[in-house]
Image (cartoon, rainbow, N blue to C red; front, top):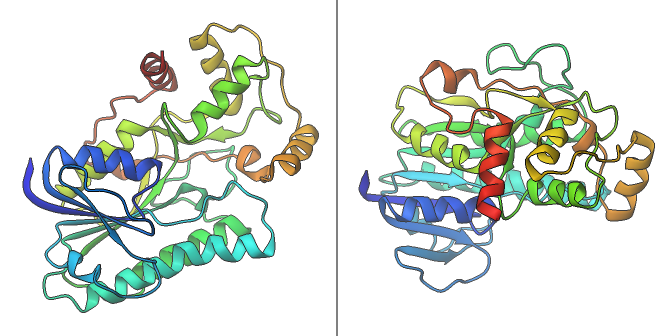
Length: 309
């Protein structure tokens, strides 16, 4: 329990931030969301305005905080135009750098700062999983973003604050993120493999993502890079097959890579988000005894669908 604790969620008004706010509001004294838009007080959840670029009265909220979670970042589900690329980078690096410079000047800085980054930093991998020890960093725009993001996180000396860069996989849940979109494909008979289907998808159930963050608070020996993905990665073909099976639809038309590129252009996204093979292992979570509630894709999908029905 964290009855007398104060939790700060920077950029916490999105999908994962909402889930974390609800979780921590039940076990902590105060939850403060730093957001660009005001929200009414909701129990012990308070929204404080910030722009992610400049210091203001929000700085006072960080004083004496027990846990700071930074969730800032423009959605990467867009075309990588020069303008969007700059926004994607700035929306991650600038708030992270601002938080670091702010924490440096506090009397009682946060005990733990978790920056939710991305497991897409690893190379395209179909040969073996990438873990925190031997995983190889990839190349390309998405990886450049991840590297700049993590560099801005670790660049400031903060001796009183433990830091974890949480390389998050694709969060699967009932209300938002990737799963509702994949389910819609299945419903319309388009839930076959995408591209070759052999590319790996590193995923995590939304509740395991939340539980891992809460668990890390009590693991004072853990700092640095931590992968936050389920222990059993699956290929795109198996993922789509599992959703079809759980939903009761035996067949789904596949989408070849050439058709994906046309569709991606029409809806304004990049095929890389679908075709890159992300095979990531959460070695540190497993070594330190974190227990996944939804370790396999079938367990995760059955739970999500039971919540939706």
